[in-house]
Structures are given as structure tokens and as C-alpha cells.
Image (cartoon, rainbow, N blue to C red; front, top):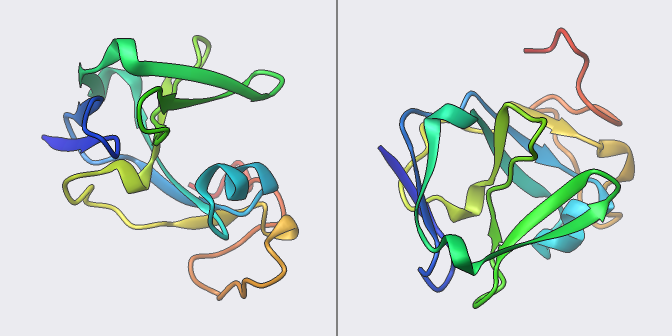
Length: 135
């Protein structure tokens, strides 16, 4: 099991296996949500994820049409989110308590990166989403 939680510990989750994908997102919304030069997210099939405590402390914000972000009502930490029509859970990587067993494989929305941040050649970067055949 791979465990994770929010800053205050009120909300916790676990994964049955390592995530399939981890990316760095340089879009302006992920920068604002993370308070950093990019957001780091792991992705896992919904059936491999479960909340272990704090369901009542989770709230969601629609940051753009159809795109939701979840966070803890108590401490404000970003939390995993999965929309009803999505088979995957998107997990802010900073919420992991254990080693997720994966490192970032791709950088997306590099075309809108923070002006003070230099993108290196690894992992590969794309101005928007990675090509469909990337993984």
C-alpha cells in the first residue's frame, strides 16, 4: 500500500499499487494551485485508490469548466480528485506519505511555464498535452 494525506492529516488515502503516470504541469492554474512553478500529479485507475479517512473534510472547486480540484476544508491542502466520467484519479504528488514508486515522466503545458523557471530536457516536455501515443 502507498499512503497519502493532507497537511493536517484529517484526510487520508491509499493506493493498492504504484501510479501508472506522473507528470509535471506548467499551466497557470496548476502553478496557482500549487504555489510553485509547476504542479506534480500522479494518475492511477480509480479501482486502485481509496479514501481511508476524512471524506467529510473534502471540498471541490471547479477551476475551469469540467475541471475540478479537491482540497481539505481544514488545512487547504490539494487532494486527489476524480470526475464522474474519468476512470483515473489525479493525485497531487506532494500528498504522498510513502514513496509512490514512480518519478515524473513528462512535462505538459510547458508553453505557459512560469517566466522564472527553466525547463530541462528531462523529462520530455510539450507545449500542451503530450501526444496520444506518448505512453
